[in-house]
Image (cartoon, rainbow, N blue to C red):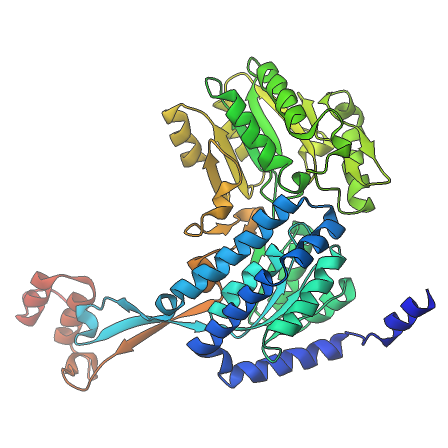
Length: 493
């Protein structure tokens, strides 16, 4: 105990002064243009890939320590996805960095134009605890690819992963440009008091508002990956077993419901609900056994505070009688069994905040089409899912439901498509990343026009005349015929 206290005392304090010094140091590195070169970006992406591939067992162990996360989930959803991000960035980096040609018009003739992607500067990334490895380093991939210096603040609620990240980033990455700051509220507040060129935050809306308020003081742009109540609409006339399995793996197979895009609730018809419940019961037992509290394939709840929050949702008077499966809990080991609730009241606590856990309410409607109005009556979710074979229903879903992303006949898989942007809308977030979108998220698109000295037209210079006005109006807003008319004085000024 005394040794532990000595370690804590020996640990340097990270306060506002330290945060200011760090930001100043990284800004000096960025100003040197070190991070802008293709060679630096490539070397750091390769180092990040090596960091991952050389430490897979340590990463799996840290995730097990923080969340009891099954090895398969750690390998597939954190390690492999991050490797793919690095490999894609390395493969496409030269293309991403190339200026994009842009069309010019008669107004600027003769000229050429292009859009140049330039790094923003020094980026602050504040990560989440639920996928603490992926959500920490995936934005870093984009920030490095775009040529920025980076400060990463991992979540203190995943301490083993946070400690490992600090150690590995220090060993593998360029410490003059990429740093990790560990800590909790005090350290995060010290960081937020500084001026950054962009802040990327993954977490909840409450903290997202704090981040945005801090960023506003410096007019700093933000990328907010938040969450919300991601609905699943289930139609009849589908392959119920496949649909049920895909719902289960998206809910309980994604960190036991502790995922921003995990299904939050189901909407189905009153007639179809009993069949859906029976199928969920059957497949949940097939996946996690008769006593899921003992299953090694389910993550635990992250901490006692989140455990108590979930139990409060579950034990509310208007909800506790709606449990049709599960409800068992083990406070000592922070485990809650997969729980299904049927015909939950829309005004209950569980339906008015993001659940972020292993509880899945089912809301029933008379007609499946009514579900879209129900979804749109709330805030816009990060994801929305529909299971149907009805083409018109699919089209109606895509046309009317506003969410960060939509998936038809599956859940959560859009996250694994690098050509798609991942981000929220409204209260589920702003901005997007993944693949090329990550590069763009941390780049400024600079407009550049090139001209020579030939073809200089006196029409734009004083003294102004009606003839010049006619010609300029035609050049800016008209076609060839309008320009000819203006040249011959056939149009009105």
